[in-house]
Length: 103
Image 1: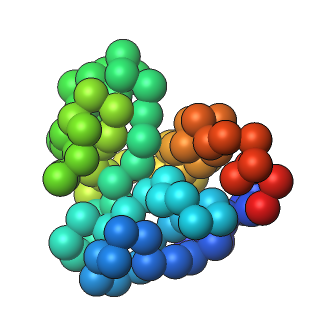
Image 2 (image 1 turned 120 degrees about the vertical axis):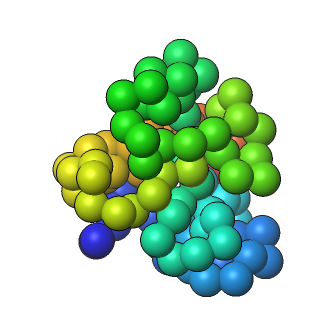
Image 3 (image 1 turned 90 degrees about the vertical axis):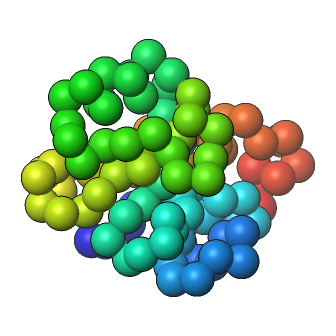
């Protein structure tokens, strides 16, 4: 799945597998297997997504209020997954200090 808006494959948090990062900050990290991804989310939306999709779980090894683990098993459309990646990117990037945003 191609990434857009400044996202780059990476290895955040020294985790095995591939993740996505903006600069040096993780915005999505592998959750043990290549078919899962942790994505930052707005707390209310995180709960709604978990209720709507069986493939969305509380974030694996993450703050479960702000992070979801999304199983990439095909039950969620690629378009929806890309929207969640974009949201995760925006949330992480928005919380960075100005000096790190410029990188």
